[in-house]
Image (tube, rainbow, N blue to C red; front, side, top):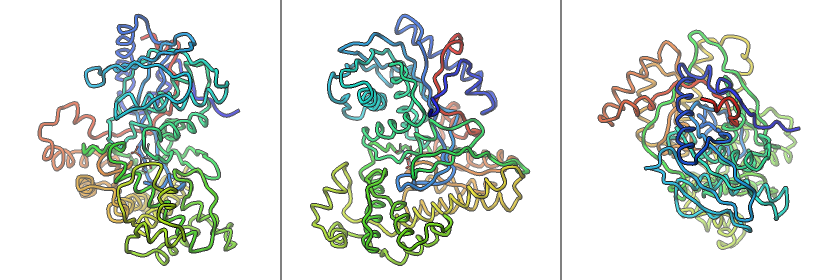
Length: 512
Ligand code: NG1
């Protein structure tokens, strides 16, 4: 039996041992949510579905090429409080937010047939995305006549929006979990993951799957090593001991990058570029790729597997295979960007056929594509992830030496260089934060998440945390945002130990 998303009856199971002082603060927050819910709906919620944000330690922009990544859940999360109504031919949904001035209440029906409608950019779309995916799954399982239940919902989220900690995945995962639970479905972690990846694509972002995996599968105290092939699997990797202890410091840039708004020229364009790189390389080696589970159906990882089969190298270790891939990308793809006509020419198809295959699922701005640069980032980053994970796993029960800690930091610094220069997904503010942090004691500093703003993560020895924090305040936040409120400053820099993944908060945990 696949493992179900846990039901917890005590908040300690989620929030204790994650960050000092977290438990009382979270209890107060949940109490406030329950009180606001009762005020709006006349009684307490039946349960609260919860899913956290995540920080990616290493493995950036490679999940949608199906390469392994190493994220962890953070403490901040999205809470979806629910009161369940009756099954109905015309089920009604009311979605409110504890911050109702910023996020006004939305009310709508679930259509009898077809998908839940998702309109222009609106905060409630992320709930609708989770709802849409869940209803599709429930109808698949119980037939088209399945009658969903009405729901009164109130949401409270503290993952900074557009801040690189994957607020969208936390929101979609918590919403889908809420809908499945409201309809008496004990969803497994794997099923929730599958449906959330598809759900999030309905908000227009051709997301990889890392964020949803980290949000759902993470366990307190562990990083989550995610493999996407042959199918998704998660391995819980402890953060090894070191002297001084290593910490992951998370610092916001406060440069907001809304993926759903900028996707056409940022995120989705990269998805197209790496997909085109995969099919072009396959063509060069006379390989026909079968569609895979990546966003557009053809991934560099799949090309690698097919190439290794063809060359008789399937038993070669992962790092050696990736070294070969790096060499191939450098030799076979040109520095110059490729036009649509050039790609179509290589694939021996007409431009309209190319456009139908790779440009019709979502809007993409751009007529030239940096295939070599994007593919090179992908295979080199995948190689760094393997090196990082191998070092952690081989030292799970020993203390890391100073050299080993330095090496982990070095890998993170290389990721940042590649994101900045090769994948072009950093921004001046992120580069600046990384410089300040390194100069004041961080061993590794890089953007985390999609980039173009958002958030950074730093590998910092415990005895340097204060120096790095002070330097960032002085040289970045105080200069760039002199009027930052105390609350915002508190959110700007966080040391969050790896947190717990999705859960349903029920029973006694709601008696606050
Ligand atoms: P963010 O934008 O930080 O949530 C996005 C993708 C991930 C991954 C990273 C880059 C979504 C939901 N998430 O993360 O899958 O591709 O960018 O590594 O689109």
